[in-house]
Amino acid sequence: MSFVLVSVLLLMGCSSNGQQAKNDGSWEVTVKGKVGFPQQGGTISIMEITKAGTGWQDTIKLKGNYTFSKKVKLKEPGYYKINFYNRQVVDVILHKNDLEVNVDGNEATGFFEVKGSPDIEFIREAQSTINGVQSLPEAQKLIADFNKAQVANDEKSILAIQKAYQKLVTDASDKVAAKVKSSAPSLGVINVLQGQLLDKDAYFDVYVVTADKLRKEWPNYTHAKDFVSMVDKMKTLAIGQMAPEISLPNPEGTVVPLSSLRGKYVLVDFWAKWCGPCRKENPNIVRAYNQYKDKGFTVYGVSLDRTKDDWLQGIREDGLTWTHVSDLKFWQSEAAKTYNITAIPFSLLLNPEGKIIAKNLRGQALDDKLEEVLGGK
Image (cartoon, rainbow, N blue to C red; front, side):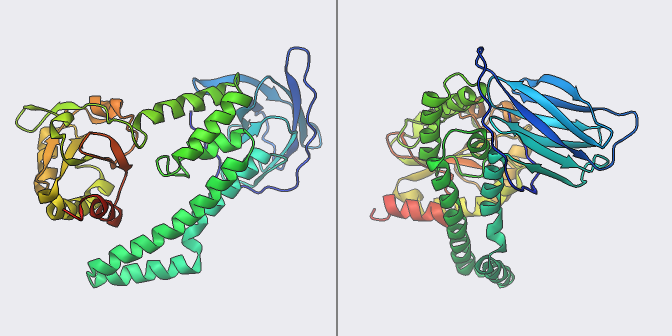
């Protein structure tokens, strides 16, 4: 389940009251607030969002002074939506704190504020740290320099600028990662990690640390168990693991196993003709392939195209002269399922024994890694 919070949250002071657990292990929190423009004949409802869709739900009665107060019984922390008259929906996280939710109530993009949620505050701060990179003065200068370099077709400067910008992104990500690792288990932490604010491969250790905490401190909570299960699946593609086998046909119809390329450094590249970011990255891969193909490097391209014509056209247009395979099943590709592919481009670099040594190397990062492992040959 992916729980999406509105990107701009107006969060004010907190009122934390840590409700006492009842005999059955449950507790109650209060959700209160005010509606600026109530709609005649409509209803306010609150519902839990689960992996399967929706869970518990109930209506909320508005008082004569446009305020409301609703007690919600919980047995574990959860994601909830409050729907105001089918005109405005606010996402909240319920755990141990009472919340105050104030809204316009008459339009989807109307005013709202959520007070008293440490989880939402944690998410907002993480989003602000990552998304705020592009507003930094040094980032603005790099963007301007990048545009000039593109006009001048200055490839060397473009690569240097991309590397400098990535450094800013990495610094911001490091700050978020450090805060996640030092935080107690919460749905705020889970949401940040599931929301792909941090690169799962670069910060795999953060995911493992968080999963271990959840396994120990939240062993019976649904969202914790789902997160732990996700991390366990990630471990199969972790650095140092053997890459799972792929056996798909090439354009001539001959099945070419990934393992047949053992003895070389292999970039397993998931891509498709219809994928814009993939096509933009292809020139970088072509350059790296041409530079290192005689030193023990090759590429195993796995296409998620749906038609053979598209697949072959993409290969031809981008000048991709390495090994290509596909079952033309789009996201239902057997290889995509095996590797749990949910977005492309996606790539792994394997050593001659077939072990994963790096993931999602783009642009200069791929050149740097290949120079590290093959530069002396």
